[in-house]
Length: 292
Ligand code: PXG
Image (cartoon, rainbow, N blue to C red; front, side, top):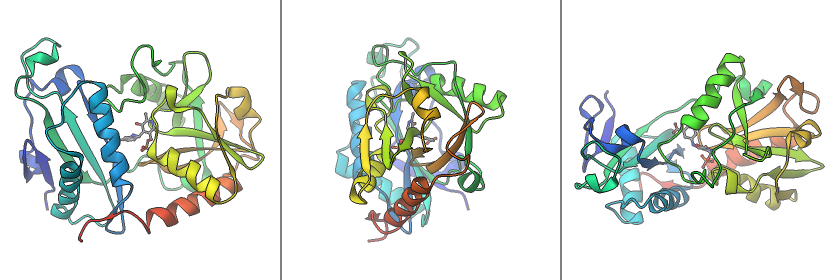
């Protein structure tokens, strides 16, 4: 059966879900989006995702034609229309249709709202058992002086360039440094190291303030580990006991090789595995019920 997609105010079959070629989301990457997961008939961290979507929209001066509560309800409805039990929900809000020319004032109709509810797989299943092999990209993450990397916008070319580099190197993912050479994040995930039972991740000023990142920081504290946000460099990765990436789509992905150097003993670490288990348990036992 075809999936039902929300676009421009109504649910339509996927084959009829279309927007105009004059949408500024397409023409200029002018828009924002979210990536949300559902586990066991519940939407995980729904409120946080909707809040971040609205903050991203506000950051680019884009008005979403709904309240946060209405938007959350639309996401739940998208899940119901697609009989989601476990799935991935992808809300997108663009500047909407407008004449050529990047001035947002050309988009007189207002924002386009799209919600896709389906599935996503970022890395093969065995990568979660064997660990990911990543390489440091020669592309630096766009600095906040140019465009805040904390905005979840439709501009992913910075990360896609890094991803192409990783593909060419036969790696699973790329590690991106910030403009000063400190670790920023992976192309679509936040990055952590584990050192002496402390989980360490960079401040979110140079990356996306990931909802999984925050969940991991909270889980670590709750279970008596130290959760630390601070800048660190490649040196600290070489010296780390463990490393992993976090993201809604990726969940918790162990990193065992960076630029051909093994992290720890080259196998997914003990703390990483604990965090995977805590995360799985939380994700499968909390969230907003889809079916009431
Ligand atoms: N950094 C970036 C740049 C991201 O895009 C994360 C970190 C992790 O954030 P969360 O809140 O998910 O823990 C992301 C997540 C997609 C897709 O195609 C979206 C992301 C990642 C992978 C795929 O919908 N964004």
